[in-house]
Structures are given as C-alpha cells and as structure tokens.
Amino acid sequence: MNPNLLNGIDLAFLGDSVYEVFVREHLLLKGITKPSKLQKTAKEYVSAKAQSALIHLMEQDDYLTEDEWATFKRGRNAKSYTKAKNTDTTTYRRSTGFEAIFGYLKLSQQDERITALATWCIAQVEAGRTRE
Image 1 (cartoon, rainbow, N blue to C red):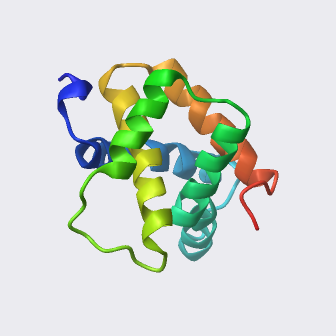
Image 2: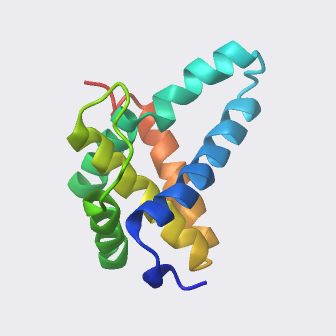
Image 3: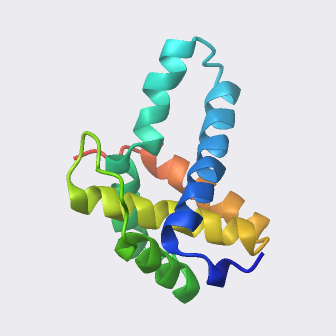
C-alpha cells in the first residue's frame, strides 16, 4: 500500500496504534502492571496534548525529515469529522499530524525509524519535556 495515496486521517488511524504499542510495551517493561495505573500513565505519552508537545519539540530539535514534516502537515490539515475531546482544535489537529507520521512510516516499512522516533518520544516524556 502506498502511503502517499492515503489521506492524513487514514495515516493517523494506523499511526495512533503504532505509537501506542510502543508506549504500552514500554510501560509493561517498566513493571507497571495494574490496569488503572497503565491507563493513567499511558495518557502522559499518547494524549493529544502530549503528542502536540512532542511535535513542538521535534521542530525545536530539528528531529523530523522533510518527508515526515510533509506527512505531519497532511495529517494536521486533513478534514476530520470527529470533534476534539478534552482539548482544543489546534492541539487535536497537531496530534493527528503526529499520528500520521507513524502511519506513514509503518506503511513505507521504515521500522527502524519508527523505533527511533518512538524511543525519542518516550524519552522526551520521561524527561518532563512535554509538561507545561
């Protein structure tokens, strides 16, 4: 499947799960096993607010390639028919762009880059860089 033929929402649909699998595995490897604690902790990594903050850090740290930035913009600018829950529209759109990057990388079989990007994101969250 050619990721360049899909819209940003479709890429985000896949990318959401790609990133979340990394986060869930990371939390289990940290020894967190209580379901309520897993859910609460996972939000720190996968919420729209956290993902929007991560995009800001990627821009600040010049971490994304040109193709990844283009994909982010496709996801951010895509017309979504769902409403943002518990966040503003800008944050929601930025998080959609974040997820689109992971979907694009998955469909273009860039597994090493997915691992590097997810690992970087997790490190930023744990360093407290996504908190206000």
